[in-house]
Image 1 (cartoon, one colour):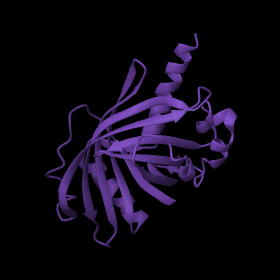
Image 2 (tube, one colour):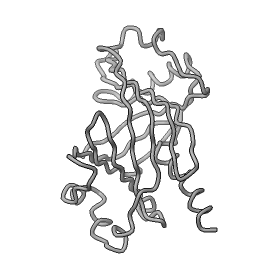
Image 3 (tube, helix red, strand yellow):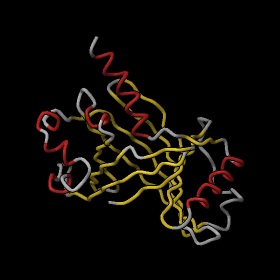
Length: 211
């Protein structure tokens, strides 16, 4: 288990951002920008039992590698998301029940009335550009610029955001970096994760399906 700490910034335009000439990043970048296509499927029951228990479950394909991830809803304040996360590499898109039983999802997996009803709910599909940053105080941050969509049935919504994930160091310095980006880019602090965005879309889909 690890504690994920990140600040989300929602982009306030449809056009792609150009991060190449941002003065705030000029002396912080470590290495080159990397790009990757990420497709993640999120799972829950029709009654959203996992969400109601404050849990998220997804299967992600990244660079040919399957990743099984469990997250708690955690705490969100002014764009800063702090939550527990369990992530395991898999050889195929089949659940590793042993690993799931080591997470906060264990009670749900053990409850056949819940687990037997878990199925695909929605999918996020986006291109991620990542830059590794080292701040003046030595804190290490991964900047991820994501652009794509979340889909549920025939419905979709835009994903366009920046994530600043603290890898090591000071949360206060992370907040300061976010403030500086808000001054230089058309972005704003966001308390809505991709999972929450997907759940909002899924609830609309489920309501339509039940009519």
